[in-house]
Image 1 (cartoon, helix red, strand yellow):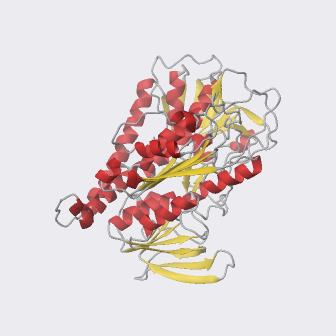
Image 2 (cartoon, rainbow, N blue to C red):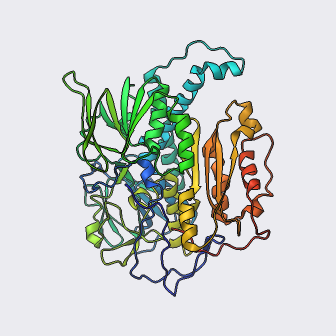
Image 3 (cartoon, rainbow, N blue to C red):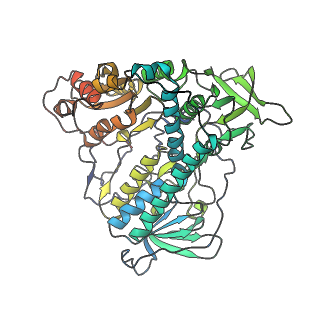
Length: 568
């Protein structure tokens, strides 16, 4: 999906309080319901795949209907007499789980409805099992790099792997995390209701195919997403697959085409090439890795793409993909993305469709409360409150995570859920999505928070402020050199007039861990002139960020409160 990467600022009525980044939550009455101008953020959404702009109204798989199961404990809050629960959450993924735990902490009697398995996409078919595969690919790369090992004085015989053993590692990790999430909710007294949740009306949900109806003072939709497959692509689950199938690692093809070079495609290219596959990227945009900061993309391509068994076609659409059958290979027909003229035909052993994800919102009963989705996404305001077809807020109904499309990341869903719980317990809270980090777990890793340089410069031009950039290299970091991992860059985008951090982008060893110092600084409104005084242990990779902040040239010596409205 080629949505705008800029974050919109929602207008508030005169009766509502202004929320500032330096004070991201406060006690205040909720603003009165009013028609709202809906604007999706879509932050870096095209990084997940470039073909998501196609219709998302296609039929989505429904989850099985099963009987309700209660796991309630006696100390799980005291609901109002007129409701079964204070809070009911539809969807037990990372977002729903985070909301449920925070709700119990706030004393709410809470239930969560799940029609599939606890953990959702992230735990069962996404970030958790993929990290298990990437852990294997990272070790394989080290063991297969004679130059790297010799630099340490190490000698290792030929490295190999057992495909089923690798697959089992991913499956076992997902199972372990899934059980951990389930047990944590049961231990806190969250009722787990098994079955697909359908909204029947205000504060009323039917669970499963039975006539069991549950009422709640507030309801959160957290149904997540499923892989998006463009028209013309036939999925057989064997030779033409989505990330759901790829994570099972049933085969390691000799040659695999990956359609989409965002987060999902990049990570799988890391896995497949480490295990011996040749990879061909098919990307609709003119450059690989869309959505990343261009300078980071350029460096990442030099390290992650060019030296590996990877080739690519950019500026093309895959209009037709046919699975392998009758001894024939997978057939991929490409057309020029601009002219729509036939461009090329590929014959490969397998194709992975990594063109992003589609919201899983069909069958929720949204029509019963007059809510119309936008390309499948549930429309919400900056407080995750659901908006109906007339632009009015639906009382006591919220939507978080991939289903609302604001920022399709598991930890963003959890943060949105926690924000909603704050609101329903009387504390107004608006989540600053610019402070939410993202990471791609390749080797080396890529991470980011805030705006890219082009986005920041566009914003500065519109709002009349100067934008500066500071950079530091991993080659100057002692710990990175000790690991023989000096290939990397950290980039800071900021305002030199007041020291505001606009964005931080990192490519290098453990970049996914390093980004949080920057994201927390953005969340708390910390200025560069203040964070320069933070002390970092030596020698550590964290000094990459230390040097980055210290290299920035800020004109203002004193901090000033961040006065802009929170970006949502």
